[in-house]
Length: 173
Image 1 (cartoon, rainbow, N blue to C red):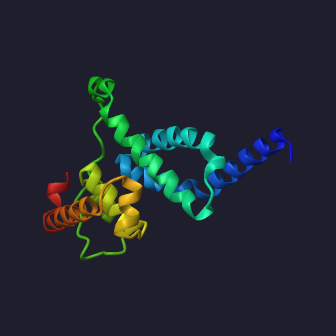
Image 2: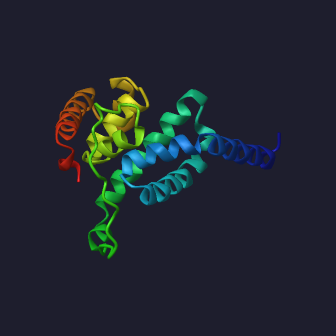
């Protein structure tokens, strides 16, 4: 195959991957970012960063982990940017979240997700990777670029916070 054909095929493969995995990647970006609008931007920025490196991803099984790691690192980097401190608050208030009783309705994923979104970013990412994406401690540490001990402590703290939120949903608001 000529280099131009390889490049074209690489873009087609990338587009097919994004079309298939976008909903899951967007859920991950939302778990990391905490809101749907930021998640959309985060996902787009991350995919722009992944495309030039797309040909270097050897194993298709590692693709999701690579993209999730890019999303997570992109979010962490965006939180450190000085311009972020100059953001102006919106004049519109978000809709009230209401009370959540997960014990009464454990299948209501939106309500559970609302509790997870109340966690600090690192705990939210860790809990989402461990329990939503069902990654091991080692896999979670690799995605987040931290030690397994950090994953364990963030998971423990996140679960403790979720237990408090379940006991008193007013704390989530």
